[in-house]
Amino acid sequence: MALLINDLCIACDVCLAPCPNKAISAGEDIFFIDPALCTECVGHHAISQCVKVCPVRAIVPDPAHRESKDELQAKYEYLKAQKAA
Image (cartoon, rainbow, N blue to C red; front, side, top):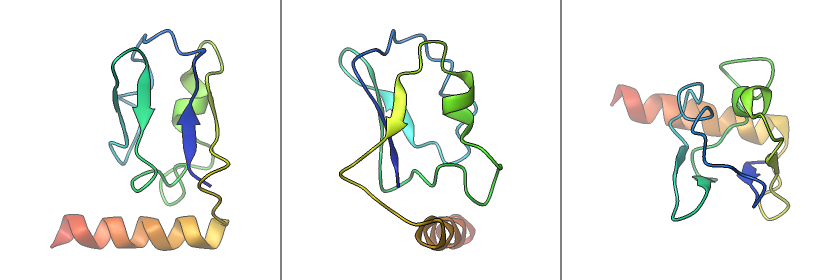
């Protein structure tokens, strides 16, 4: 499933750089993860890098965007193909 950043976010921006899909951006008050771009780092890393670096644990699974590892892998492959095109 895609991840989301909840209201515990302190807008420190440490999650931006480690995101391999550039799925994270600044929102009005907190940061935002685009579920269309989030693969939970499947295809890149063994664990989600944004979750790993978040100092306040504000990044959690998004219940509105449940995806299996196979679906996340397919999304990764699609995004990879889009970048190559």
